[in-house]
Image (cartoon, rainbow over all chains, first blue to last red):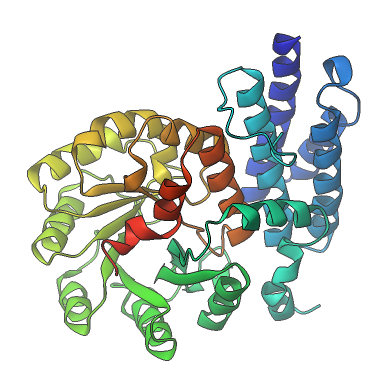
Length: 108
Length: 276
């Protein structure tokens, strides 16, 4: 299960990373790549173990879209950056090497 | 909402889906930590980004930041020597005493001796160099000469070592070995080569890593492999922001098992060794 979850989360991270970079670079394809990220978080992951994370990502993304439409770059980018970091920390956690010191509900 | 109002509406960074993130961050900032942001900009950039001294102060207050290193953006008014944008930074320092640590910025391709001397005499606290914006390699002889001048003047240097970089470690090492007294801040934690930078610069105590807009996974690599007393927090305002960069730093530190005493160092005390 850990490998399936990691694969799923890596796909999400890849789409989010592409979207963030394309927004940074003001690519004309940014909106399309944001759509790819949205699709990757729409459905449940392997075993449903990461649904808490996915729900958090959906909330951040919904707001990021809203700020994107308003051309509020800082508010949009803050949400996408945090979303990426949430996914990354979860991947580290799933890898089994994450410190036991962190067991809180935000970063999990 | 006007562009100015939008820029100053920092509540958008800590509300909605960001609210639990910000709450999590605030809970983890050790009590009485006067956060020191080691990387922020004041002025305007060729790409349209801007930040004022007042805007910086509002952001600092909202995020419990007590002091910030500030320097110019890649300013369209830089002309030959960045003197105009450097003056903007100095004015910010004078108008907000005690809150900003002013660094001056130079272009190694241009005549820089006079502006270097002017800024040192004026009392600037450090030098900022940006290899991507000013299109130079870190081992370019004109840049190396600037590093040597800074070392001689006992002036810390912060270099952009983030987005768009290719050669960092290999290009910097001869300068660092040749100038062990040079105090160097690796902006954005040299994230493209973060692990190798951590390995190679481990034995060079005057090199410190600054965390702005590096991602949590990259910072995890750093925290898991490097002396935390040589890591300092940065935001990269206006490209980064305080809530999300604090989150990346604290989440990575927690994942790597960084102790609370070291967190206080990363957020404040480590960089204060150079700028009390």
